[in-house]
Length: 258
Ligand code: COA
Image (cartoon, rainbow, N blue to C red; front, side):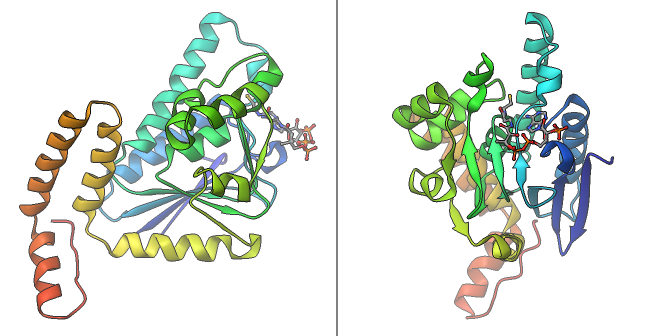
């Protein structure tokens, strides 16, 4: 599992893409390993929150591996894009909050990976972009779609058509990054947010993620109906009993995920 490192601490599962000499570019092997560790984390009750970051100080992920891209044809290119989309859908729908700790270049598949996560916290040296146009291709791991949903059509068109990078501050201004912090404070900040999520009610977190994701796929009345049902699920949980009792008794809640 050398291309992907993992660590579980205090219910926070950290995944580090580990190809620093290639700026953590995603080759097939790395994607396969990433998929495996995310599936494992999704099924592990000891994991409440997932963090994804890149090894080294320069890059989160500098995209799909261009050496592999260079060898693709129509069929293998489609298969590669389909697999990448499947892995990123697994991340987006894994039922637990996933934070991208964007510690440098998040380009191409790296920007797409960050966008499949539920929150993006970036260091001030981070750069985001969809530079595929410069290679004569388009994003294949969701970049034309997730970017449009996150930042709107105008900025998504601009970033995809021109392929230029944006700074961490620009990313924050357009809603692509949730928060930007000095490079040296990135992991401390991400762990603080992760800890807050790890203390929260897991079923409610999962229902929020699901309601927002599904709501974006359908019309308003269907989306609101889904929210009603998800609300009902939360109301049947022990965590709802605990959360409301804790408020009324003026004490901190202790959520168990039941
Ligand atoms: N795929 C494969 N290898 C990559 C890579 C990628 N997406 N991005 C970087 N690398 C490799 C470089 O080839 C280089 O390897 P080498 O030392 O064996 O030559 C190494 O990582 C370091 O990259 P380098 O380009 O020397 O660093 P830099 O600081 O000069 O530039 C970037 C950094 C991110 C601007 C530049 O690497 C880049 O543009 N990468 C490609 C980004 C991209 O187009 N992504 C979308 C791919 S679909």
